[in-house]
Amino acid sequence: MGKMTVKFIGKAKITKQGQVTLPFEAREELKLDLNSEVYWYLIDDHLVVVKDLVSTEDLSAIVKGKKNKKRS
Image (cartoon, rainbow, N blue to C red):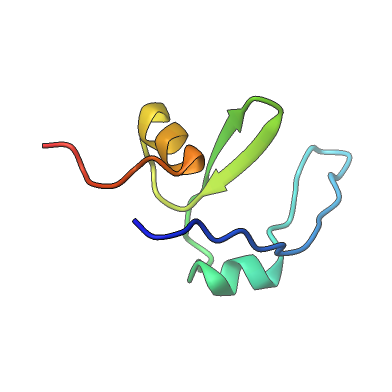
């Protein structure tokens, strides 16, 4: 895996119902459509949203930049 890319993608407000709208730029960048699902993880005090379900160990390795190859 190469250098991790960090990109600001936008902001969203939380509604009275606790809903958040994913910014257009994020939906476009991740190729998400109306039926797509996203997954939320809390890493320390950071909320991370991903388009594919991953294990917490794999996500932690990705965020720390240590994920070089998949496990067998």
